[in-house]
Image (cartoon, rainbow, N blue to C red; front, side, top):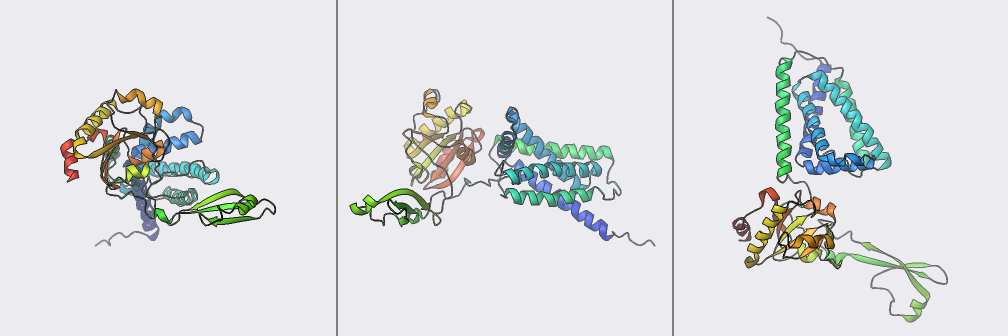
Length: 375
């Protein structure tokens, strides 16, 4: 009777290496595939940083290609399909990532590599050190014993093609709807009100005209009403200490006069419907008209509606009649609006600062669906 075949310690270590690296690649590609638009933004950052501006129109295609390749390599490693090709592909991809993240770490070309999407944030140096470890792991796999193939090469190819097709469908679903999982600040159910705002401290710094001495005061606890003091001291700077303030977002919303109206909209104690369009020139026109009809239908329900866009006031004017925009229009930075919702336009419903729900333009709600949330 033959003794059962046992794996040598070296083979066990290689298997652990292969499985871990495969799972890491699958995890990394999945969290990026959940939000392909966000990954496309990261690709665009890299293209601009390396002077490849002419390729920015291809950012989404490049993002999907990169994510899919990463997933297939991880899938192939995990299930040991076309192993030699997968091992070399993984090693070469890690060499590419290692070089890119080295430049990021030393020159800070892109502040956020997006290696794990928005799920896990790493500094540029942490990303580089992580890639050193992954590159070593990939290099070791090049010397792994091939072993017995689980299936014929043709069958392995079919399995990999089906896996790639399924993963691409997953990405396109998230592209045409909102991401299945939202790792960003503006997720449904989150309270976006700024807390402890009264604990913000403002310090003012004054310099003595004669001696050059500087003093810092906590405003308003300084002798601003002392005429003699004011004659000898001059304001030079101020600093704000908001370490005790809890800010769930960095959004600043302004009206056409550049007044900050953020808290009045985001922290509206009633129901607030936000129609968000980062770029009115690129928005979906049919969806904008549908959003305007929804806003009109909700007027009797005491739901306040506002459009927030990064397009300038003069450019917005040409769209007011075209899209039946009869509600207030406000302005914000396009980066913040892209973080709020991956749709142009998109809709967000808040109540007392809490996000009740948000919708991609392919899934805009009916009035009845909104009414259910108002109860």
